[in-house]
Image (tube, rainbow, N blue to C red; front, side, top):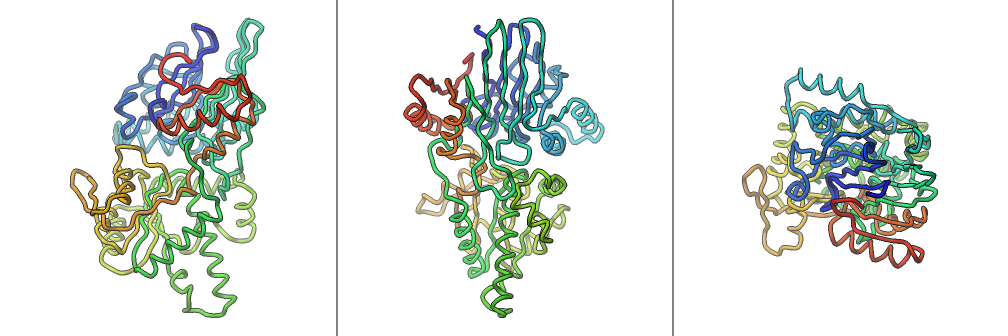
Length: 476
């Protein structure tokens, strides 16, 4: 094996389970992410509770961000004997225990003693490092490696990783993109490409498409809400608790604020926008609620646009029409109320792919009623109920979806708003690769069609002599 070398332990057959090992020599390596495979990917990579590789010689785990498909195997990593530091950004250090506590309770054990023991172990090994700061991983005669985290714009604290490796008098820069964010996020500071890269491991989730811009997605969202007000129906948004939910809240706060301003300026209470003023935005996810509170505490990491709202007395994540639901009994009452009345509402609930969580109860109650709408704002992995519901738009007959072992008819309107994607589109991915003048690009974290489409564009647009490949198992 020629060093440095990369082995992929997930995220190569689909978009989940990202885990990449950078080998520095025969006895030293570092991991970038240790994610859980989800949906159909779980049958292609490693299954639940499986790590899929040995931890001998792994010096550190570097976390790009705290979505489960990038951190969900950390409990298994500990179980295999890893006891090195977990390097991540300062916001990720605050968010990681929340995400993994929830996953541990669902996947491993809900026993309080075991949960607290795991969290104590996790806290001892988390080592936050500032953005744009070089952190030395190993420095010994003949071998040096340092990493630097830079903002990736995917969610609060997300980063791409620059690895500087020097051995035998040769220097190599390896960059792992993690998940790169789309432009126009109202909460997050935009990413900037790295200075340069010899090797770029690049995600390709949306490597075959372009997103609508922020202005267009806002117009589409407003149009959907207006239709729901007319139809006296609810908009059900399956959203990931971390990232997408906070971006949605930020966007909805601004829309409602501007509607209220317009109504006051027109002096017409009870007129065109009266329904908007009474429209509840229901956040029904205990985990999303806890994460949103941490987001609020970390406002110093927001982009300037969102911070200026705070200065002006507004709260993008805690506005007046926001209703938060914590207890299960309150959740059930809200489901029954929305099902039995004609009260319009916007419901944001997890999980994002409809494979579990409170969104499933809303779907069971309202999916068969055409007054309601199911709005997807994120990627739906193959094999998940969300993907089945999303695909029903293309079916002329009434579709069906299996929820908790029972089939439910899909009569509600089903829509996808791609402009809310947390991932960069083809244009953004190309700009990132061009910006760092990558000599060798390995594509991961994408469906086959997305990777192939992005590979074709990269081969056309990168300088002559650049090498582009679709990553697979084994060394790359």
